[in-house]
Amino acid sequence: QVQVVESGGGLVQPGGSVRLSCTASGSIRSIFPVGWYRQAPGKQRELVAGFAIGGRTNYADSVKGRFTISRDNAKNTVYLQMNELKPEDTAVYYCLYSGRWGQGTQVTVSS
Figure (cartoon, rainbow, N blue to C red):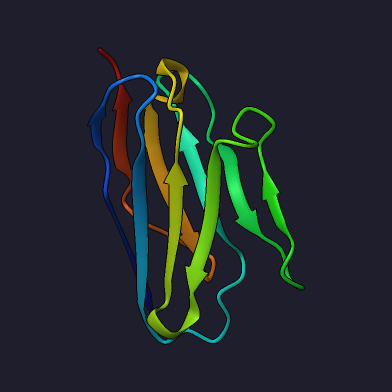
């Protein structure tokens, strides 16, 4: 069983930055699928950024150039650095690691 825990969310002003962390534990055979998703009120969950097998990264068009996904395999941890945040980035952010979802962490962008 794999457990996934996110951290790092909160309230941030427009134009600000925040880094989310996601740490997995348990019996992990492969980190894939792995990535960050978000769900805003009244909307479906969408991919924000993810790693594909082979090392390629994928980003939603709305976050390209502002968000960066990275990982530390030794720590079973994935990060999401979010810069130049906008109010429309407000959502619950979920980590997917080894096919398991975390509980989500709220990011609110507001002045």
